[in-house]
Image: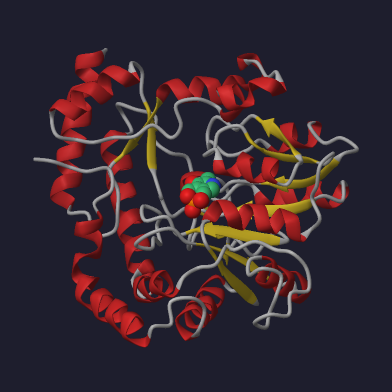
Length: 368
Ligand SMILES: *Cc1c(COP(=O)(O)O)cnc(C)c1O
């Protein structure tokens, strides 16, 4: 049997007919940029997460960048984020001219450690970007409390957490802005790049809409220089169709995660759910000894796995100039050697889940 890490054919299969019809309508309408398809998706997604505004953007990296720009983050400022994330999070900080400040994670939830985060705040800290890693909400109550105390903005990186809830409310609505990615493999993925910012702040929403569209609302009345970072109509149309299935896929992911945890808890460290958090399992990540051996064996058995991520961001060559060392990120460094992402997606057959379970058990036995 072959099991892909993410199988979009299996997940989207039942929706493909509707998606193709919708794409056909966009092409026939020739409204490729802006217009009703984008408006409709923005309003449905805002309603879905429970925010007043949603602005579609070209990708999730831009969403983070534009959100920081909207609040005037600039050179000389510091922005705190998690050491264990995808590089887009810290790239967005650098794009504004500000300096990323990396903080270690908690060993159980893999999310940023709020107390270490508080310790990293200086007079230059303007914002914090908690990442809801693998679809699990970060400890927002403590993070917001600390941010309020030090008057820092909170920009949520919800790129992996569409539909995840914290204390009963959707992530992305707790901070000053919530940033989403619609990269194809994300829980809500386009058929190309896409992203969005959600916020309850009217003024910020308008500024973001203008900045991402050459500093204008009307055709040639540019109020300031912006950029071109728009969600296009074909992607918006695809996303509108797929949004109708997101809750079902989340339900599937939670069921699969439960199966994995019940069957693997005795042979690997399975995910821990933080208090008040309802994760959406963008990734299902276990910890095993001899991870690379386990991974190689699984590949010979047709099971694709992933490592998210193999190196803490501050230790990458890209951040050599910041001078961080592994001992600054003991937890993230250790995790990076043990983590293994197992196949998961909406509509994944339980037969495949059982196959992965059997092969992981075999692999762990072989590798020890
Ligand atoms: C995917 C991702 C992003 C960036 O999204 P793109 O749409 O690929 O630019 C940002 N942060 C995290 C944590 C992500 O996983």
